[in-house]
Length: 606
Figure: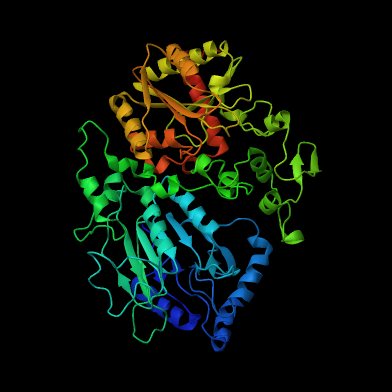
């Protein structure tokens, strides 16, 4: 059953009135699972603070889990400062800092899963005066732009203010009279919502209720519904509570996601010229896969042209997830050594600034970690030796971090392992034993063994009626190379080339195509024609086609490009992110053992 969510506009500290209404709605149309509040959450004047603090201090109670982003108003600084110092809220939490029982503060910006729904948010209002609470920063905006680059569909996007331009064009006929787009509207939010493309966008601060007709998104199949909510207790009796029950996008089929209501309009944010260009674009052959699967790869000119930022700062996205969708275009530093330290529990502020203002209250480590020495002090950004880096690498066999239970075959120069968070069953990695940034950097002699692995896997999958796609993404910041091996049904192999070329077109480049007679010939071509000292991507497709692309220094190239393209090919958009496909260690062990038993007669090392 889809989750049942209540949405609320500016609370303004009027919690008694809010929960009187929530209780009534819950009885008549509930039960509801959560309450999401946008606009100013805290009181407007000190005389309302006692009522508000009754809830914060436990004398009154929040009736259901409540999440808010309007972190400004009377009492906000005191309450939120105490919340920030609470030891339970240390670290980087995007699913809410707990203020009291059933109340969670969505700080800054982020994305999290709530009851199966993907929720993104931007907390506070636009400001340049550097206030600690109640405003968002450029870092918060940049983080959301990185989120927009990630695979998957955002179900709900929460902002305090409305996006500028939402009332323009068709679909805006029912706007309350006398409302100005210049008050309580924000052009930055307009930019973000066109990039994030949520299914629902909820905002407050305007003082009116407005549910716009759904509108189409450029290069996305899903429509967006905008809902503006009034303030609790407003004199005009405008609606401040609204109920929705959306099915999580991650569980919907592509057909369901692409359904458009009959009252769907054009996007209020895009120019008519762009629509004309799209309308006049040449039609694709019916054998091609629909453009709609590849909306993910439209990269705006604004992001392409964005300049370098403060390169000394670490990218939190990279440290926490192991990859950053902005790749080498990211304004922040992608430091593998810092990531390893972060994974060992070292404080992000300590790594980023050399100090942590939380001091002893911080639950993370304030010293750099190394094997056998947990108190090694080192300045952020200084080098760690290659041997230490290998000890921390996930793929080095000598590393304590290597997942030995996933390994299925070991040779002299390469070993095979099941992928963690596999896209499909029997998704395999071919990994060099030596700690190298890409497979083309290994000695020519090692190619013989790699070809044996490729040929063996091809034969194994043919017995199952499948073909194989091999691909590798090698960045200049890469650490330990891995060649991805993904089996696909033979029936899909005729369109693989078209799918990759379409995705490349969306990113603004063209693959170099080469036909070869065998995998060994393909490897010889790649070693001869690719500069292994630069970043590059290549794919070896069924039928002997090699697609290759050198990635320029300032070119945006998603780290998960290959996986996301194959996910689109197989109509598995929800599995494009490996973190959505994780299994328990017990399940992974069984999967590896089952694969080894089936692969045994083909294994070149058996």
